[in-house]
Image (tube, rainbow, N blue to C red; front, side, top):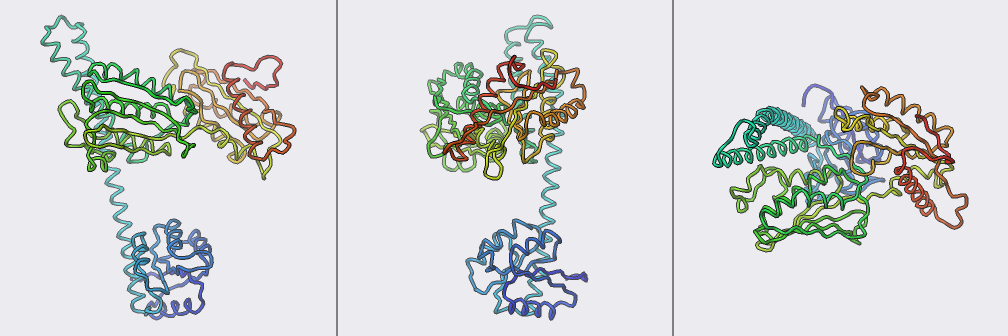
Length: 530
C-alpha cells in the first residue's frame, strides 16, 4: 500500500464481526479509516457521497442476501474494488462473485490482519490495473474510430469525382465511345459504387461502435416500408430471375421506429437474400404479430438459398465477419452489413436472429416495438391514481417556404424537435413521436397536463426558443395551435386503466383529424398562437 490513508467502507450488520474486522485492519494498517454501515442501502448512500479505497462487503444483510448483494453494489459503483466477507466457505458463490468483478472472497473465520492487509492491497492494485486497461482500450478504440472516419471521408471526394467522370463518359457527353470501352467503364462504375457502399458501411459501423449511431423513432406503417424495399430491389431480383414475395399480416399495427433505419435493415436483408439465392429461387418478406409477444411486430426475410452452417450462424452478426464458404467474386464486401443491422435493431429495443440449415435456405428475423399511444400517455394523463382534470393537445407545424426545402431540412426539423422536447415539463407533458415518414412539412404533437388558458405559457416558450434557430424564418413558416382534450364527464364503473385508454383513443382521433387540415375549422374551440 502507499502512504496515503486507507479509507475502508465496511458493510456488516453483525456488531461482533464488525469489531473483529476493525481490529484486524488496525493491526495491519498504521493509517486506516473505517466507516461501518449495517445495511446495503446505507452503503450505497455512502458511496453516492464519497469514494472509499475499498469496500468490505458482508453478503447477508437485513435488506439484501447472497449474490444479489454484490451485484447491486457493483452496478452502483463499478470502479470501487470490493472484497466479500462471508461466514460460509462456498466455492461456487466465490467463483460467481469473482466472475462478476469482486476482487476477493474471504471467509470470516480465517481472517487475520496479515491476509486481510494482503487482500486489500491486491484488490486495490488489481482494480487500478483493470481501470487502466479499460482506459487504454477506450483510447485505442477512439483513435481507431477517428482514423477510420477520417480515411473514409477523405476517400469520398476522389470516388465522387471518378463516379462523375465515368458517368459523363458513359452518357457520351465527352464524345462517342466504342461498345468495348462502354463495357470497361461500366465495370469501373460498378466497382466505384461497391467501394462507396463499403465506405458507407465503415462509417456506420464506426458510429455504432462509438455509440454515435442515432435513431429518430416515428409512428410509421411498416407495410409501406416493406413495399418500398421490394420496389427498390425488384430490378435486381428480376435480373437474377429470383422471385420476390410479400406476406403482410392484415392486423399489423403502427410501429415506433426510424423509417430510414428500418428501410436500411430491410434493404440489407433482402439484398443479401437475393445474392445468396440461386436463379429460379425465391425470397419472401413477411411481417406479422405473435400472440405470445403482443408488444412487438415480427419481420422476417426468407430465401431458398444455400443456407448457413452452425459455425457461421454463431458469428454472422459480428463486425467484419464473412462466411468463407459463401463468398465469391460477386459477393465481396467488408462484412459489416449484418453488424449494422444488429445495432440498428438493438437501438429500437428489438431483437434480430437467423434460422438456417445448410442446403435449406435461411430466415433472418427481427422485431420492432408496436406504437402504443396509451402506454406513452399513461404517466401524463393520470396523477396520484386519478385522471387529470384537464389536458390540451399542442400542435407545432413547420412548413417549408420552398420546395424542396432550403438547406439541410432534416437537420433543421430535428433541431426544432429537440428544442420542443426541452420546453416541456417531463412529469406533466409529453412530446409524441412524429407520425409518418419524414417529408417536407413536419408536425409535432404535445399532450400537456394543463388547460387552454394556461397553455399559452408553454406555447410562448416554444415559439421564443424556436425563433432563435438560425435562419428558421427564411426556411419555414411556424404555426402553433392548441386544442383542449375532451375528457369524459362520468366514468361509471370504468377502471383507471380503462379511463386512460378512452382518453388515449380520444387523443388519437384528434391527432388524425388535425393532421388532415392545416388550421382548426370554424366553430372549434382552439387557440392559434401563430
